[in-house]
Amino acid sequence: MDPAARLLDLQALDLAIDRLRSRQRVLESGSEVAQARATADAAEADLGELRLRIDALDRDATRLEHEVDSLSKKAAAEEQRMYDGSVANAKELSSIQHEIENVRRRTSDREDELLVLMERREELERAAKEADARATSSRDDVDRIAAASADELATVADDLVARGSERAAIASGIDADLLELYEDLRRQKKGVGAAALVDGVCQGCHEQLSAVELDRVKKTTGIRRCEYCRRILVLA
Image (cartoon, rainbow, N blue to C red; front, side, top):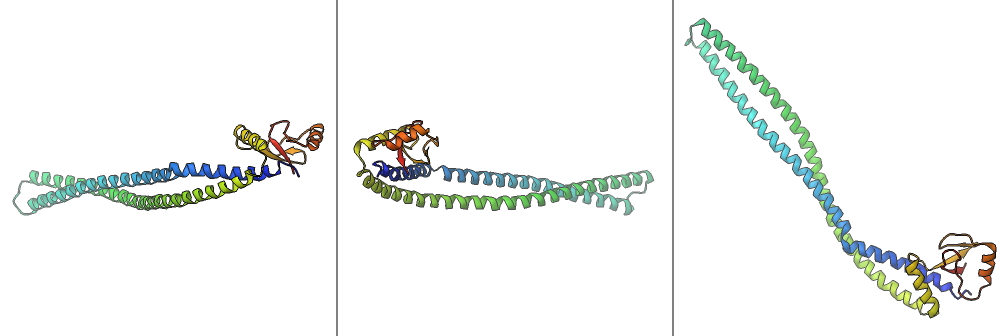
């Protein structure tokens, strides 16, 4: 049996441990929770902006309603003057009639403006309702992700302890010099110090060994190394 065969088990376990540690760093940094919180803050900001615009429309609508009311009262007062007999001069009556028409025109313009504002407010209300739903959902996501992250972090910690014990058991059965070389290569080769040789192809660098080199590797009784990446080779 290839003396380096157990290295493949150790390598698979080390890669799993590397992934767990990487995930642990992400969870401990709180980046996923921070991203969810940023999304929620943006949704809240959108909702706040829409509410401010609705408030501004309400103020404009109130102003227009007051103007319409004031103009209506003015038109009514002028009509009363025109018909109550207090004014007999034809020229003055004509002037009053002209003023009434002018006031009514202004009233109609303000009512049209008010209608536009009301339609715009309805649009903003719909948008605000949708924004409110997004904000609520985003805040729920923050709570959910925070809770899930805490649970996952505990699970990862437990998995690391278990995998660490498993690794120690495997490593204890590997020659010390071979293990030292493997560890050194792992540091140099992005975590992969040993690779299987399958059909003459190194599974570490995926290079095809030459026929001469493949024959030499198969005949080697000691530690086998890939001629390209120099990782430890294990015959499959």
